[in-house]
Image (tube, rainbow over the protein chains, first blue to last red):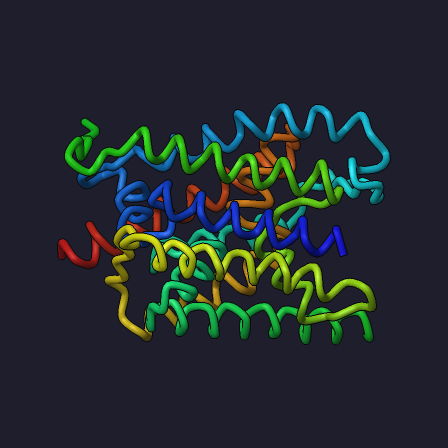
Length: 141
Length: 146
């Protein structure tokens, strides 16, 4: 129960942070990505602020094998720089630049009742489903 | 060379929001031992495993609740979506497939990955940011400007 409660709290905090930062607004995101136009550097401060806090948290997390609530610490082990990472990240970046939405802001904008966000999120979930289907077939072969 | 849009520049709210996002990621790794990566949390629901569904739903419900609680108390900050439905569909598909292949998005690689000094996440973040910059350049300056 406390695991789910902490999950809800973290999600809520994340959503509030996206709203306050301006990151939930696709036009603001595109203003940051439009370095050759009227450039809005604000989102660099979002990343900066988040990483500032994150550096402390992950320094502590790395030294522990269980979390403060007693759950196993699952830090990613992979350090591979492979084709999947590059191709996936290029696709993600292209989609991000096309509409100004990455996954978190898409979900928050959907919660705000934006019709465009619903279209984006449905397509995103379909894309993730497509990935699962392709992976299943790849493993089965 | 670079033309900064000072009128749109909001460093303090950006920094404050960023710190709150950082606190969320910090709480999630320190309390639950998990990475607050939105694409991973959502994508994991499409290949559901026992004991692994409800916390994902809880996290996503928290994200949905954020604008609802905000709206109950005050006016929401602007959310301007200029892309049309066809572009949103293509963008959604690319983001959905891409984040799963690349094992992360702005939160998992960008915030959490860079915070734990992962070279893999730095590489992913530089790659998707470059792709984002190039895509916006093509749309706003090559296609729209042609």
